[in-house]
Image 1: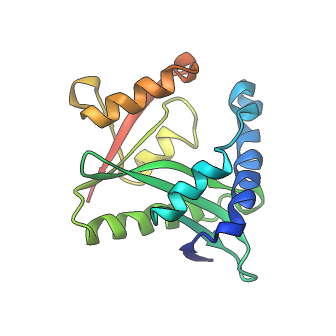
Image 2: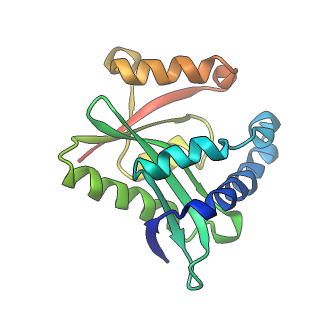
Length: 168
């Protein structure tokens, strides 16, 4: 596996990775998440143009996972990290997150942040193993509060969610 910038012509492949990765939510009683459409191509292109979209590519240079990030309150915020199920459980998500952490360190950002489901094994418990810690509401930055507000609007708060932070 190698990590590289996503190419514009690969954006539909990112949507396919997201759809495939989301199917595991169906198995734990969250079909609404499994059926949620990935970001539109225009939105994915915004991450590409900002230089904040990375893929993990296999030996044929085909993307099997991706990560997109934003700058939020001086940190790099993981907007999405998805690994195709055919490539899951190989440490690829960790590689992408560590790649982003290295970039954040180079940019002198103090932390990575993300929002996640707290009771989904491959969400909050996974991120905790990678050094992220749960944030209580009193320690949320203005940008994280806004992200949580936007996520609650379509009903993501139907399941317990939280913000997490990984100091760098």
